[in-house]
Image (cartoon, rainbow over all chains, first blue to last red; front, side):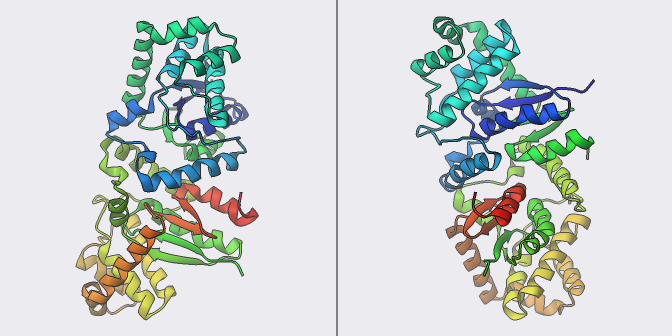
Length: 201
Length: 201
Protein backbone atom coordinates (compact mmCIF):
# COMPACT_ATOMS: atom_id res chain seq x y z
CA UNK A 1 0.00 0.00 0.00
CA UNK A 2 1.58 3.24 -1.14
CA UNK A 3 1.44 6.21 1.22
CA UNK A 4 -0.49 9.33 0.23
CA UNK A 5 1.45 12.47 -0.61
CA UNK A 6 1.06 15.23 1.96
CA UNK A 7 0.61 18.58 0.24
CA UNK A 8 0.77 21.73 2.38
CA UNK A 9 -0.44 24.90 0.73
CA UNK A 10 -1.41 28.47 1.53
CA UNK A 11 -4.33 30.14 -0.25
CA UNK A 12 -2.20 33.24 -0.88
CA UNK A 13 0.90 31.46 -2.23
CA UNK A 14 1.36 31.54 -6.04
CA UNK A 15 3.67 28.53 -6.04
CA UNK A 16 1.11 26.64 -3.93
CA UNK A 17 -1.52 27.45 -6.53
CA UNK A 18 0.66 26.25 -9.41
CA UNK A 19 1.53 23.04 -7.54
CA UNK A 20 -2.14 22.46 -6.71
CA UNK A 21 -2.77 22.22 -10.45
CA UNK A 22 -0.27 19.39 -11.07
CA UNK A 23 -0.02 17.41 -7.83
CA UNK A 24 -3.14 15.27 -8.28
CA UNK A 25 -2.27 14.16 -11.81
CA UNK A 26 1.34 13.46 -10.85
CA UNK A 27 0.24 11.43 -7.83
CA UNK A 28 -2.34 9.50 -9.84
CA UNK A 29 0.21 8.54 -12.49
CA UNK A 30 2.15 6.80 -9.74
CA UNK A 31 -0.78 5.22 -7.92
CA UNK A 32 -0.79 7.73 -5.08
CA UNK A 33 -3.42 9.90 -3.50
CA UNK A 34 -2.93 13.39 -2.09
CA UNK A 35 -3.73 14.68 1.38
CA UNK A 36 -4.27 18.43 1.18
CA UNK A 37 -3.32 20.59 4.19
CA UNK A 38 -4.28 24.26 4.25
CA UNK A 39 -1.71 26.12 6.35
CA UNK A 40 -0.82 29.72 7.06
CA UNK A 41 2.51 30.55 5.51
CA UNK A 42 2.80 33.48 7.90
CA UNK A 43 2.73 31.13 10.88
CA UNK A 44 5.44 28.91 9.43
CA UNK A 45 7.56 31.97 8.54
CA UNK A 46 7.21 33.26 12.08
CA UNK A 47 8.20 29.92 13.58
CA UNK A 48 11.29 29.74 11.37
CA UNK A 49 12.15 33.45 11.72
CA UNK A 50 11.63 33.92 7.97
CA UNK A 51 9.88 36.56 5.89
CA UNK A 52 8.01 36.35 2.62
CA UNK A 53 10.27 36.64 -0.45
CA UNK A 54 8.08 39.46 -1.72
CA UNK A 55 8.85 41.51 1.39
CA UNK A 56 12.38 42.06 0.02
CA UNK A 57 12.09 44.62 -2.83
CA UNK A 58 14.79 43.13 -5.08
CA UNK A 59 13.60 39.57 -4.58
CA UNK A 60 10.02 40.71 -5.02
CA UNK A 61 10.67 42.01 -8.50
CA UNK A 62 12.19 38.71 -9.58
CA UNK A 63 9.51 36.70 -7.79
CA UNK A 64 6.64 38.47 -9.55
CA UNK A 65 8.30 37.62 -12.86
CA UNK A 66 8.98 34.05 -11.79
CA UNK A 67 5.40 33.42 -10.59
CA UNK A 68 4.07 34.16 -14.07
CA UNK A 69 6.83 32.29 -15.85
CA UNK A 70 6.48 29.25 -13.59
CA UNK A 71 2.73 29.20 -14.23
CA UNK A 72 3.26 29.41 -18.00
CA UNK A 73 5.86 26.65 -17.72
CA UNK A 74 3.21 24.37 -16.20
CA UNK A 75 0.48 25.56 -18.52
CA UNK A 76 -1.51 26.98 -15.62
CA UNK A 77 -3.58 30.18 -16.08
CA UNK A 78 -2.27 32.90 -13.79
CA UNK A 79 -3.01 36.58 -13.28
CA UNK A 80 -1.01 38.35 -10.59
CA UNK A 81 -3.55 39.80 -8.14
CA UNK A 82 -3.18 43.54 -7.58
CA UNK A 83 -3.51 43.12 -3.84
CA UNK A 84 -0.92 40.54 -2.88
CA UNK A 85 -0.39 38.73 -0.62
CA UNK A 86 -3.71 38.60 1.22
CA UNK A 87 -4.62 37.13 4.58
CA UNK A 88 -5.58 33.52 3.96
CA UNK A 89 -6.83 32.86 7.49
CA UNK A 90 -10.55 32.68 6.74
CA UNK A 91 -10.19 30.57 3.60
CA UNK A 92 -8.00 28.14 5.53
CA UNK A 93 -10.50 27.90 8.38
CA UNK A 94 -13.29 27.05 5.96
CA UNK A 95 -11.06 24.38 4.40
CA UNK A 96 -10.70 22.55 7.74
CA UNK A 97 -14.32 23.04 8.65
CA UNK A 98 -15.29 21.38 5.38
CA UNK A 99 -12.73 18.61 5.86
CA UNK A 100 -14.25 17.82 9.25
CA UNK A 101 -17.92 18.19 8.37
CA UNK A 102 -18.14 17.17 4.69
CA UNK A 103 -14.93 15.31 3.99
CA UNK A 104 -11.71 15.78 2.08
CA UNK A 105 -13.35 16.08 -1.34
CA UNK A 106 -15.40 19.11 -0.35
CA UNK A 107 -12.36 20.71 1.28
CA UNK A 108 -10.27 20.19 -1.86
CA UNK A 109 -13.05 21.63 -4.03
CA UNK A 110 -13.02 24.71 -1.79
CA UNK A 111 -9.22 24.92 -2.04
CA UNK A 112 -9.31 24.76 -5.84
CA UNK A 113 -12.06 27.35 -6.05
CA UNK A 114 -10.19 29.68 -3.71
CA UNK A 115 -6.78 29.30 -5.33
CA UNK A 116 -8.18 29.66 -8.85
CA UNK A 117 -10.42 32.54 -7.83
CA UNK A 118 -7.59 34.51 -6.31
CA UNK A 119 -4.90 33.70 -8.87
CA UNK A 120 -6.90 33.92 -12.08
CA UNK A 121 -9.38 36.72 -11.40
CA UNK A 122 -8.28 38.43 -8.21
CA UNK A 123 -11.18 37.18 -6.09
CA UNK A 124 -10.64 38.71 -2.66
CA UNK A 125 -10.61 35.60 -0.50
CA UNK A 126 -10.00 37.67 2.62
CA UNK A 127 -13.22 39.65 2.31
CA UNK A 128 -16.80 38.66 3.18
CA UNK A 129 -17.99 39.27 -0.38
CA UNK A 130 -15.25 37.06 -1.79
CA UNK A 131 -16.04 34.27 0.65
CA UNK A 132 -19.74 34.50 -0.20
CA UNK A 133 -18.93 34.18 -3.89
CA UNK A 134 -16.73 31.16 -3.18
CA UNK A 135 -19.46 29.61 -1.04
CA UNK A 136 -21.94 30.01 -3.88
CA UNK A 137 -19.51 28.48 -6.38
CA UNK A 138 -19.07 25.48 -4.08
CA UNK A 139 -22.80 25.18 -3.36
CA UNK A 140 -22.25 25.95 0.32
CA UNK A 141 -24.53 27.91 2.61
CA UNK A 142 -22.85 31.34 2.90
CA UNK A 143 -24.10 31.80 6.45
CA UNK A 144 -22.65 28.47 7.52
CA UNK A 145 -19.35 29.46 5.94
CA UNK A 146 -19.39 32.77 7.78
CA UNK A 147 -20.21 31.01 11.04
CA UNK A 148 -17.39 28.53 10.52
CA UNK A 149 -14.92 31.39 10.13
CA UNK A 150 -15.79 32.63 13.60
CA UNK A 151 -16.14 29.24 15.30
CA UNK A 152 -13.56 28.78 18.09
CA UNK A 153 -13.37 25.04 17.37
CA UNK A 154 -12.52 25.71 13.72
CA UNK A 155 -9.94 28.32 14.74
CA UNK A 156 -8.37 25.78 17.06
CA UNK A 157 -8.38 23.15 14.30
CA UNK A 158 -6.42 25.38 11.94
CA UNK A 159 -4.02 26.33 14.70
CA UNK A 160 -3.42 22.66 15.47
CA UNK A 161 -2.75 21.95 11.78
CA UNK A 162 -0.28 24.82 11.60
CA UNK A 163 1.48 23.63 14.74
CA UNK A 164 1.66 20.12 13.38
CA UNK A 165 3.10 21.33 10.07
CA UNK A 166 5.69 23.44 11.87
CA UNK A 167 6.62 20.51 14.10
CA UNK A 168 7.10 18.41 10.96
CA UNK A 169 9.56 20.97 9.60
CA UNK A 170 7.33 22.93 7.23
CA UNK A 171 8.72 26.47 6.73
CA UNK A 172 7.26 27.40 3.36
CA UNK A 173 4.65 26.46 0.78
CA UNK A 174 4.03 24.39 -1.14
CA UNK A 175 5.64 21.80 1.09
CA UNK A 176 5.31 18.09 0.35
CA UNK A 177 6.08 14.90 2.19
CA UNK A 178 6.49 11.78 0.08
CA UNK A 179 7.13 8.66 2.14
CA UNK A 180 8.25 11.04 4.89
CA UNK A 181 10.76 12.81 2.64
CA UNK A 182 10.34 16.62 2.68
CA UNK A 183 10.21 18.58 -0.59
CA UNK A 184 9.82 22.34 -0.52
CA UNK A 185 8.63 24.33 -3.48
CA UNK A 186 6.78 24.07 -6.76
CA UNK A 187 10.23 23.63 -8.32
CA UNK A 188 10.80 20.31 -6.56
CA UNK A 189 8.29 18.72 -8.97
CA UNK A 190 11.02 16.97 -10.97
CA UNK A 191 12.53 15.46 -7.83
CA UNK A 192 9.14 14.32 -6.54
CA UNK A 193 8.47 12.78 -9.94
CA UNK A 194 11.70 10.80 -9.84
CA UNK A 195 11.02 9.70 -6.25
CA UNK A 196 7.57 8.45 -7.21
CA UNK A 197 8.91 6.63 -10.25
CA UNK A 198 12.05 5.09 -8.77
CA UNK A 199 11.87 5.43 -5.02
CA UNK A 200 14.48 7.15 -2.84
CA UNK A 201 17.51 8.53 -4.71
CA UNK B 1 24.31 34.70 -33.43
CA UNK B 2 23.03 33.30 -30.16
CA UNK B 3 23.93 35.14 -26.97
CA UNK B 4 26.09 33.44 -24.35
CA UNK B 5 24.49 32.39 -21.07
CA UNK B 6 25.66 34.44 -18.10
CA UNK B 7 26.28 32.20 -15.12
CA UNK B 8 26.87 33.84 -11.74
CA UNK B 9 28.26 31.58 -9.02
CA UNK B 10 29.81 31.70 -5.57
CA UNK B 11 32.60 29.28 -4.63
CA UNK B 12 30.84 28.49 -1.34
CA UNK B 13 27.36 27.86 -2.77
CA UNK B 14 26.32 24.19 -3.11
CA UNK B 15 23.66 24.96 -5.70
CA UNK B 16 26.23 26.96 -7.69
CA UNK B 17 28.51 23.94 -7.64
CA UNK B 18 25.76 21.60 -8.84
CA UNK B 19 24.77 24.02 -11.61
CA UNK B 20 28.41 24.43 -12.64
CA UNK B 21 28.39 20.72 -13.47
CA UNK B 22 25.48 20.89 -15.93
CA UNK B 23 25.47 24.39 -17.40
CA UNK B 24 28.17 23.85 -20.05
CA UNK B 25 26.60 20.68 -21.45
CA UNK B 26 23.14 22.22 -21.45
CA UNK B 27 24.40 25.33 -23.22
CA UNK B 28 26.35 23.30 -25.78
CA UNK B 29 23.30 21.20 -26.66
CA UNK B 30 21.60 24.42 -27.71
CA UNK B 31 24.54 26.05 -29.47
CA UNK B 32 25.34 28.45 -26.64
CA UNK B 33 28.45 29.30 -24.72
CA UNK B 34 28.65 30.22 -21.04
CA UNK B 35 30.17 33.31 -19.46
CA UNK B 36 31.17 32.49 -15.90
CA UNK B 37 31.02 35.21 -13.24
CA UNK B 38 32.47 34.60 -9.79
CA UNK B 39 30.54 36.72 -7.30
CA UNK B 40 30.25 36.99 -3.55
CA UNK B 41 26.86 35.81 -2.41
CA UNK B 42 27.36 37.74 0.81
CA UNK B 43 27.59 41.01 -1.11
CA UNK B 44 24.39 40.30 -3.05
CA UNK B 45 22.60 39.24 0.16
CA UNK B 46 23.66 42.46 1.83
CA UNK B 47 22.48 44.58 -1.10
CA UNK B 48 19.09 42.86 -1.08
CA UNK B 49 18.81 42.75 2.73
CA UNK B 50 18.79 38.93 2.63
CA UNK B 51 20.55 36.29 4.67
CA UNK B 52 21.81 32.85 3.74
CA UNK B 53 19.16 30.10 3.98
CA UNK B 54 21.50 28.14 6.24
CA UNK B 55 21.51 30.98 8.76
CA UNK B 56 17.92 30.02 9.68
CA UNK B 57 18.09 26.81 11.76
CA UNK B 58 14.91 25.20 10.43
CA UNK B 59 15.66 26.07 6.83
CA UNK B 60 19.27 24.99 7.34
CA UNK B 61 18.24 21.46 8.26
CA UNK B 62 16.15 21.10 5.12
CA UNK B 63 18.78 22.80 2.97
CA UNK B 64 21.54 20.43 4.03
CA UNK B 65 19.30 17.53 3.03
CA UNK B 66 18.31 19.21 -0.22
CA UNK B 67 21.92 20.00 -1.24
CA UNK B 68 22.76 16.30 -1.17
CA UNK B 69 19.54 15.21 -2.81
CA UNK B 70 19.81 17.84 -5.55
CA UNK B 71 23.38 16.72 -6.27
CA UNK B 72 22.29 13.07 -6.47
CA UNK B 73 19.42 14.10 -8.73
CA UNK B 74 21.94 15.58 -11.19
CA UNK B 75 24.41 12.74 -10.73
CA UNK B 76 27.00 15.11 -9.29
CA UNK B 77 29.38 13.90 -6.54
CA UNK B 78 28.84 15.91 -3.37
CA UNK B 79 30.13 15.73 0.19
CA UNK B 80 28.83 18.37 2.58
CA UNK B 81 31.91 20.21 3.92
CA UNK B 82 32.15 20.25 7.73
CA UNK B 83 32.99 23.93 7.73
CA UNK B 84 30.26 25.62 5.74
CA UNK B 85 29.86 28.16 4.34
CA UNK B 86 33.37 29.54 3.95
CA UNK B 87 34.58 32.92 2.80
CA UNK B 88 34.94 32.73 -0.97
CA UNK B 89 36.62 36.11 -1.36
CA UNK B 90 40.13 34.90 -2.21
CA UNK B 91 39.01 32.19 -4.63
CA UNK B 92 36.83 34.75 -6.42
CA UNK B 93 39.68 37.25 -6.67
CA UNK B 94 41.92 34.61 -8.24
CA UNK B 95 39.13 33.80 -10.71
CA UNK B 96 39.05 37.38 -12.01
CA UNK B 97 42.82 37.71 -11.98
CA UNK B 98 43.01 34.62 -14.19
CA UNK B 99 40.22 35.86 -16.43
CA UNK B 100 42.12 39.10 -17.01
CA UNK B 101 45.64 37.67 -17.32
CA UNK B 102 45.14 34.21 -18.84
CA UNK B 103 41.64 34.24 -20.25
CA UNK B 104 38.25 32.73 -19.54
CA UNK B 105 39.34 29.13 -19.95
CA UNK B 106 41.93 29.35 -17.18
CA UNK B 107 39.44 31.11 -14.92
CA UNK B 108 36.82 28.41 -15.51
CA UNK B 109 39.39 25.68 -14.82
CA UNK B 110 40.13 27.41 -11.50
CA UNK B 111 36.41 27.66 -10.74
CA UNK B 112 35.86 23.95 -11.40
CA UNK B 113 38.88 22.97 -9.31
CA UNK B 114 37.74 25.18 -6.44
CA UNK B 115 34.09 24.12 -6.49
CA UNK B 116 34.95 20.43 -6.81
CA UNK B 117 37.70 20.65 -4.21
CA UNK B 118 35.43 22.25 -1.64
CA UNK B 119 32.29 20.24 -2.35
CA UNK B 120 33.77 16.78 -2.86
CA UNK B 121 36.69 16.70 -0.43
CA UNK B 122 36.34 19.70 1.83
CA UNK B 123 39.34 21.57 0.43
CA UNK B 124 39.55 24.78 2.46
CA UNK B 125 39.44 27.36 -0.30
CA UNK B 126 39.60 30.19 2.23
CA UNK B 127 42.98 29.15 3.64
CA UNK B 128 46.50 29.66 2.24
CA UNK B 129 47.18 25.92 2.18
CA UNK B 130 43.98 25.24 0.26
CA UNK B 131 44.74 27.93 -2.29
CA UNK B 132 48.27 26.57 -2.75
CA UNK B 133 46.86 23.12 -3.42
CA UNK B 134 44.40 24.55 -5.93
CA UNK B 135 47.19 26.52 -7.60
CA UNK B 136 49.23 23.34 -7.97
CA UNK B 137 46.26 21.46 -9.40
CA UNK B 138 45.78 24.23 -11.97
CA UNK B 139 49.52 24.48 -12.75
CA UNK B 140 49.66 28.03 -11.44
CA UNK B 141 52.52 29.67 -9.57
CA UNK B 142 51.36 29.66 -5.93
CA UNK B 143 53.21 32.90 -5.19
CA UNK B 144 51.53 34.64 -8.11
CA UNK B 145 48.15 33.40 -6.82
CA UNK B 146 48.94 34.70 -3.36
CA UNK B 147 50.02 38.05 -4.77
CA UNK B 148 46.83 38.28 -6.85
CA UNK B 149 44.74 37.81 -3.69
CA UNK B 150 46.33 40.92 -2.17
CA UNK B 151 46.47 43.03 -5.33
CA UNK B 152 44.32 46.18 -5.02
CA UNK B 153 43.53 46.08 -8.74
CA UNK B 154 42.21 42.51 -8.43
CA UNK B 155 40.21 43.46 -5.34
CA UNK B 156 38.69 46.34 -7.28
CA UNK B 157 37.91 44.04 -10.21
CA UNK B 158 35.91 41.65 -8.04
CA UNK B 159 34.12 44.53 -6.37
CA UNK B 160 33.18 45.94 -9.78
CA UNK B 161 31.85 42.52 -10.84
CA UNK B 162 29.78 42.25 -7.67
CA UNK B 163 28.41 45.75 -8.16
CA UNK B 164 27.52 44.97 -11.75
CA UNK B 165 25.76 41.75 -10.76
CA UNK B 166 23.80 43.54 -8.05
CA UNK B 167 22.84 46.29 -10.49
CA UNK B 168 21.58 43.61 -12.88
CA UNK B 169 19.31 42.23 -10.15
CA UNK B 170 21.37 39.29 -8.89
CA UNK B 171 20.43 38.47 -5.30
CA UNK B 172 21.46 34.82 -5.03
CA UNK B 173 23.49 32.09 -6.70
CA UNK B 174 23.50 30.44 -9.07
CA UNK B 175 21.93 33.23 -11.08
CA UNK B 176 21.63 33.02 -14.85
CA UNK B 177 20.73 35.41 -17.62
CA UNK B 178 19.57 33.86 -20.88
CA UNK B 179 18.84 36.45 -23.56
CA UNK B 180 18.51 38.94 -20.70
CA UNK B 181 15.93 36.80 -18.87
CA UNK B 182 16.87 36.20 -15.20
CA UNK B 183 16.75 32.69 -13.73
CA UNK B 184 17.66 32.16 -10.09
CA UNK B 185 18.66 28.78 -8.71
CA UNK B 186 19.89 25.36 -9.68
CA UNK B 187 16.21 24.36 -9.78
CA UNK B 188 15.49 26.66 -12.71
CA UNK B 189 17.33 24.21 -14.98
CA UNK B 190 14.11 22.88 -16.52
CA UNK B 191 12.92 26.39 -17.35
CA UNK B 192 16.29 27.37 -18.82
CA UNK B 193 16.20 24.19 -20.88
CA UNK B 194 12.79 25.02 -22.31
CA UNK B 195 13.86 28.61 -23.02
CA UNK B 196 16.92 27.39 -24.91
CA UNK B 197 14.88 24.86 -26.89
CA UNK B 198 11.82 26.97 -27.70
CA UNK B 199 12.65 30.58 -26.92
CA UNK B 200 10.66 32.78 -24.54
CA UNK B 201 7.60 31.19 -22.94
